[in-house]
Length: 195
Image (tube, rainbow, N blue to C red; front, side):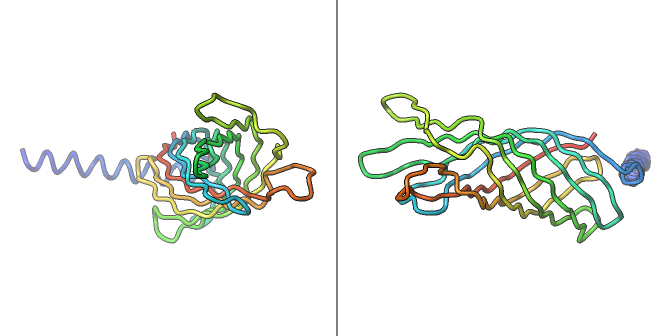
C-alpha cells in the first residue's frame, strides 16, 4: 500500500513538472488573480492612514526565455486613504482600472522578480463620511506608476505575489495654485492561477 501511494505521488509530481515545462514551451499563459490592497496617498496630505481594499482581474504571461517573461494584467483596484484629521474622519475611495505591464526575471525555478510601468484610469473618487457619499471633484483621470514585486508560482499554476506601486502622477488635478499634490502608494498581496 505504501509503495502504491508513493508511486501515485511520484506520477502526480512528474505530471505536474511536465505540465509546467509544457506551459513554458507554449509561449503564453492566461489566468485570474485577486487580492488585497493597503493604499494611501503620498505628498502634501497629513493625518491620512492606509485604506484596505481589493483588486481582481486578468493576468497573462508571455514567455520570452527560461529567465524572462512579460506579464500584462488588467485589474480593478480599490485604492485611496482614510482621512483621520481630528474631528473629520472619512474614507477617500478611489477606484481604478489598472494596466500594469511587468518584466519578470526568474531568480529560481518558481520565484521571480517583477518590475514595470502601470497606467490606471480613475472610475470614481468618493468621499465617504457620516453625512453620506460625495464625489471628489478635479481628480486626474489617468494615473501613471511604477510597480516592483516578487512572485512565487507552484507547479500546478497557482501563484502568489507581493507588489508595491509607486504613483508618479499628481492625482489632484485642481488648477488652484495652492492645491495639495499627492500620488498613489499601494501595497498588494495577490493569489491567482494560470490555466
